[in-house]
Length: 440
Image (cartoon, rainbow, N blue to C red; front, side, top):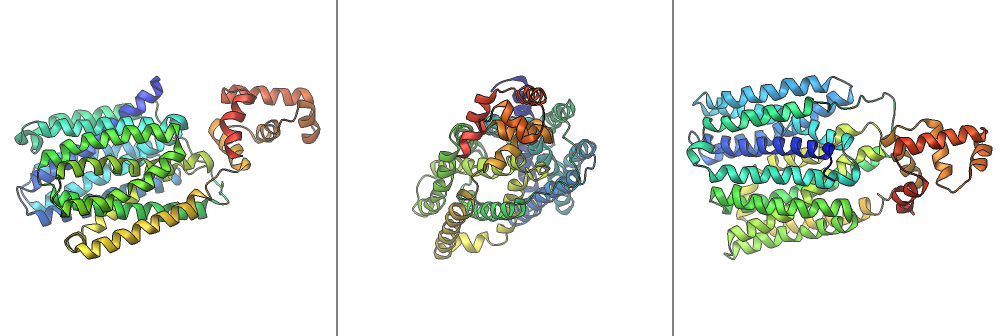
């Protein structure tokens, strides 16, 4: 788990999440000195969130069209630093709002997030991805918690750039040091990808709406900055670690817990209305939100294992959430202040999520034998001939039977099998246990 490769991507995610999460807090507090709360909400939660989503979408477009995304990443990260500095260089709230949105677009919450999540999909083994993501984002949450323990005059001012600028430069260095993404091949269409992607998108959008409702309600009641951005981050970190382990070890259980955790979204609103402790409710809510964060991330990150050339959609789960969070700013007052409407909306959305998930995703996302072979071919770059040999090998056919079926010599089959074992690092027994048996 803690090999050099995994640690590298944990650090990339840590520095990236710490930068975007903490700077988001700093810009919010700084802007409040020049504008009222409504203006800050629109600037940050609406335009900021939509800018992040646009950055992810632009990354996907460039990567899908085989543009030099590494070059764009370098330029955009440097531009995000320029925009962050420029944000503090003016006392005009409208100009601040523009630079805030640009920072979100260029930075590690926007275009950078697309790059980071794609690295996770293409460079980290599937059995470690949940924990790599959880530890990286968990450490970033702890970093934000430590920031709010510093004097407010520091973390909500231009002085905070003393920390933020080196962090993003370290992140940039780690990404550029032997972390380039693969070039996508042209003309490889996936037969069932559109239907699968559409179903998954609907589910995550519905989940994002429900998550946005509950977190918005909690943020409105949470008036203490340390409680809102500090203590709750520790709960979030704990939830991430538990969810990350479950994703890698007990994925079916993780999926059920994720769906079940949305019940707390409804419960949290009721408890807040009844005057229960805000800090406890916020902490528990953020712990449960972590399961959704892992779900929306891993479902899209893992698409590349089954559908070739789909790495560019790795951050789309995050993109959908940002869109929902941004749109919700326009309606949160009416929804959250009207108790009856809120209960109706949450109930409908929760029901929709459960129905869509179990009928459209859970029951139809079982990998077929062919899907499993394709996943191995993509992951380990097997040739078309090796793919044919592997499919027959996993059916327990011996060398002579494979040779007869493919009209090849036994020696050629032996060479192909040796190549398969070398590329995958696994023998027949391991391949069957790890990939084949799980589909039957």
